[in-house]
Image (cartoon, rainbow, N blue to C red):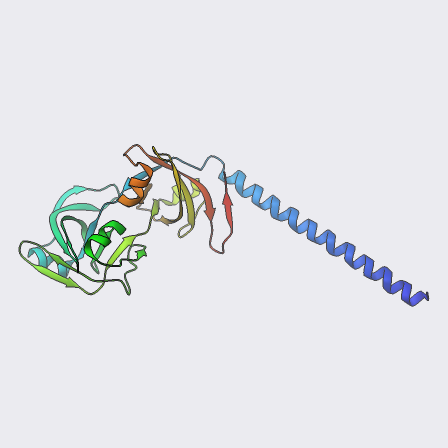
Length: 243
């Protein structure tokens, strides 16, 4: 073997060794970063109050006036600051059924939105998609009726996706950001883990997780039930999970 061929072989071996060393270093750095994130989030896994969000309606000012002849009337405050239960009630009229005495929440919004469960959707005879609040494009419509008025909506009917309200301080405590997706274990009579729970962060929010009656029934929900984050998925798909 001549000197040139031997040099080529040696250089190839060195390149392979360096590549393996770089790969191990990168993997170690990744593990260290994950460990550092886990340490930063230690102690931030709960409890989170879990509230049952039953069927309800958010009305635009225009639709409120059409149904009741006046703006919404405050009955009592809700857990989220600035939100209230109105004295007014409506009937939902679908292709196959009706649901009476549906709560109306205030204040009024730019567009009306109706939040129901999948069970409610079957009663009404509609195919309501699971959506985050405010995402009503290409959703089914519904007829709303009161004792004095009627409104036909072309869109706005959704099954509200489960979510957690957090203040910025809460978000730092739980090591999450606005629009992160997390998995939450409900510590109820029938414990279960709910995936794809959206984190919503705002300075006016009060810490609370909202689920619908179908989810509540499956977990044996009551007012004492709390949740614990067991998996975090930041934008880009990276996550940190505990078991």
